[in-house]
Amino acid sequence: MIRIEGRGPVALALRLLLEREGVDRQALIVDPVDADLPDWLGSRALAVSLGSLQTLARVVPQCAPNALLESPGLAAPITVVEVSRARASGGTRIRAGELGTPLLGAVFRYGTLHRLLREAIDLNASLAQPAHDQATAGIQPLLTVVADGETERRTGQRTREFEQMALLAEVEAERECPGWAYERFTSEGPLALLPLPEPYRRALVWCAPESQCRARAELSETAFGSALVEAFGNALGRIRLHSARHVSPVTRRIGPLRPASGQVVIGNAAQTLHPVAGQGLNLGLRDAAVLARTLGDWRAQAGSLAAALDRFEGHRRWDRETLVATTDLLATLTCPDLFKPVHAAALTLIDFCAPIRHTIARGLMFGIRSG
Ligand SMILES: Cc1cc2nc3c(=O)[nH]c(=O)nc-3n(C[C@H](O)[C@H](O)[C@H](O)COP(=O)(O)OP(=O)(O)OC[C@H]3O[C@@H](n4cnc5c(N)ncnc54)[C@H](O)[C@@H]3O)c2cc1C
Image 1 (cartoon, rainbow, N blue to C red):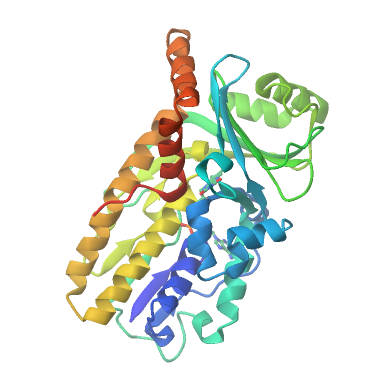
Image 2: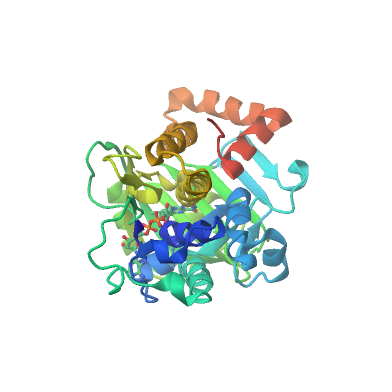
């Protein structure tokens, strides 16, 4: 028996991916999944990379890139990512076309993605069996997969505080620019405006010191819109608030994938990133996909489970460590005056040098392969 703890997108994707690998549904002990998500979570915008869309499409056909382009109400395709310094020179654009892909990713609301995964599970009622099912009560699982998201510190985790919080909201912009996602480095922290499925609507993730975030959360709607344009610039014209504002803590954590024998940790339970590059879920889905493939192979070959899990840990090492290091660096590129020319030069170099740009883009879309 394999026990999967958790009811977020990574746990649900793992259930579906394991079934696709031929793991018997009756061999899974899972948590009951509630359809009602708290608003702060259900409304979170998730930029899902092309690689993650391809993984999800194996078990949720609506997530296939072409399916999303045909029914844009589910998620907003991303075709261009503009990375630049706020109100300063130096910047770059990554376009899907130059990489030969139809899109770079798509932005879902957490609630939409969770519903699609739940529906895929419900199509197969026996996959939805709860942990306390009579048939499984009292059985000691061979393996427990912890995928229950971020909690207070777990044993062995390395933590980093950024002295930033994230102000989250939905806004409506005067200009649409469909498919464009923006990442601006301000002097206080990164500011992202991501497309949403509704025309003119965008998700805002505005990182800054806590006092700034809290003060902005209290501004009048008009003053907030002006402050946002002041920080972001005029690319989208006037911007007005379109939702409640949430202030969310930002902490990076990374811990061991195998803290105890018979236990594997994946998704946000294993690592929580700064939201600067929108990569936490993508990393968690890669954890789930590699674990499902590892367990599928182990079942087929009837080898040692410990050896299979060693391989899993090895496969995931570089992807996790590289992304943690990259997002830590990006999060703190707040440009003290001394470094501004270096930052501008680096962005300009990336803009002029297509191979560097493409390598970065592919790393963010598909992760770092190893092992
Ligand atoms: C502000 C912000 C923006 C982000 N943007 C991106 C992004 O653009 N792209 C990206 O890849 N990642 C992004 N992330 C990270 C992403 O949200 C997480 O990496 C991802 O949700 C991890 O999934 P998980 O299943 O491991 O854990 P979680 O999503 O944390 O899920 C598990 C937890 O969710 C809660 N939960 C789940 N289902 C229910 C339910 N039915 N009822 C009540 N609670 C429930 C529970 O608290 C549970 O412990 C962002 C994170 C933040 C904070």
